[in-house]
Image (tube, rainbow, N blue to C red; front, side, top):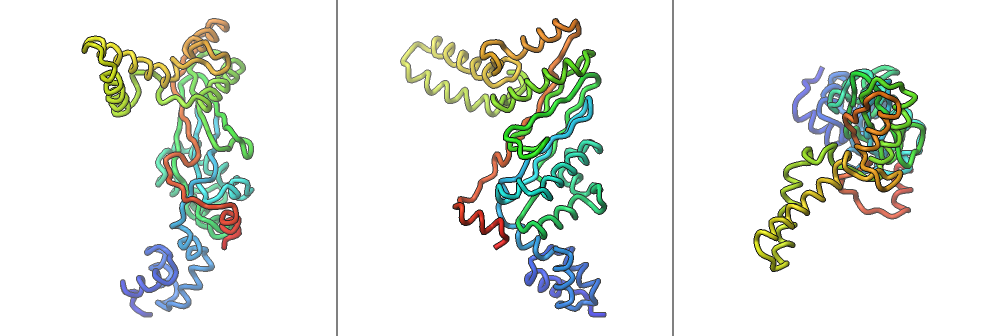
Length: 308
């Protein structure tokens, strides 16, 4: 058998675009024969998948799954919006979200290495999907919410299928109240989170760097007023207090009525059923947020979806 040299691995990698470890395995399986190794990679879908790996994937779906007091939220990206409507892709999102939920996985590498329901790993199934669907796809992020007693409720906005859409939200409510009370409340709160996009549960939980940037902007604006320093300081403090109030979930005005703070909505619901309800946390994923998407026209998207 031919020696599997670094140069041989590099040649196979350059010709196929496959990963280094996949190239080494292909050469080992085929006695160092380059052409046979290329065919082996193609039959495994690895060469085709690797060639697509450099494409920007900013579309796709956010999926959620819940089980009583626990819930999972996962974002899986694709290159085009067409793939979000693909049943094979939707099945993958649904299954991988269940894998995350069942195994309490939030780390993407751990999720990729987890066992897929139909066999193999999540990463292997994703590679197969890339080869058969014809465009790059990737696991982007995952989150788990849980409470000791109560419910975790999920909601998706712009749903492409049950439990998956463009914006996904989980809300955790801790209480001894029944699910018949907590589930509807949780869904309304999740809808609020989807619409209002709070940045933290409480004002004090807001990112310190973000608050510092807001303070710097407020100071510059206040300084332009020409007012005395003590007035300027009060103006800045007022601006920051307003920023905290408007961006913290508990102090935001509930979108359902536009006038009641979310904290009061939750307290009133608890009072109505005679059991305290605590909003313990939330997670919101908006598809593709933070990804720099390449500009493309409709014809280019059609071509991409067709694997051209």
